[in-house]
Length: 386
Ligand code: BGC
Image (cartoon, rainbow, N blue to C red; front, side, top):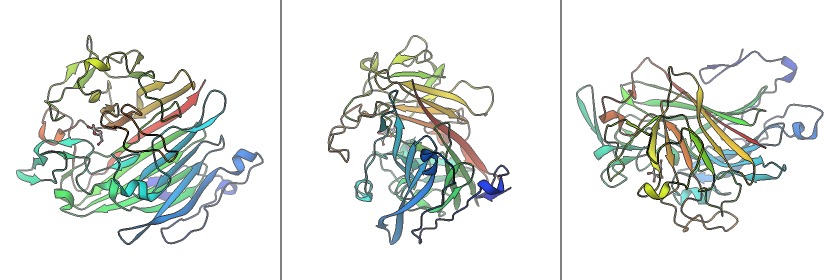
């Protein structure tokens, strides 16, 4: 058994185990497992220097599986910068929005691919009360707090460990100081990204705190599974395992209501074209869906299909909610590395999470983490094509 950042890994066949540590200060290539096939020979993790910010080295890690699916992740913001996957003809394309240099991220794009913390989505009036104490958070979205504040986890340089076992994993670590962006408690976070040979990227989030706090970690990838960021996602089909959603007010703060989707444009209980009813949703979809679940086990939350490329994206999670966001605020000003203007609805986000503004909504599932307890959520993005 190998223990990594608090996890117990499955026993490994000794011959298959090649463990490489890729701390921030070295620039060596993590080992790859030796197998016969050409594709598998490239499977594993590599690390490349990717610049510097805040006086810290930034790296770009490339996780490759035996099918040639490749995910690039930076320790700047715990950011997925690209996700290369085959279409139905085997053509490999990038299916997430991202940049090929650190500069793109330092220009503060709207959270492309980033790990979001401490709190994914909004906290109304940037305040909440916990155990009788009122906390004032950084207001960075009008009077509200969004995605962890002015310098959330998406703008921090994380520490990294990369391992190649039977699967490739990259674990990023970050310690958020007591008071950071207004939150109580020193929070110690680990996010582990694992790419398996079923073409699924699993993200495990764990955290502990030394004082009661609130948290809601997620990943903010913008998916365009057509593989062409010049296409909008309105013709793609979405199915959500959600009979309810949480309506919002004009500043996108949840009202506290949990409303049935039946008979509304929010009904994706059977696969529907994303664009079919978007005109009936002012501003486009930017809503939290309440996932149908009996327990907190990992289950299918969302399926997106694109008929042209044949790609299918399935999202599995242990979380109670999912923010479906149709890139409403994208407006063509940001360009892809290939120079394509990223227009409105050029991509969609499926952010697995607790519901927005839960710290102020006692009827929503709790987002409080107490000292001595471990936060652990898991989300998996699986890509296939047919
Ligand atoms: C939010 C949107 C926001 C976007 C980018 C999404 O998670 O729900 O309202 O504009 O992130 O910040």
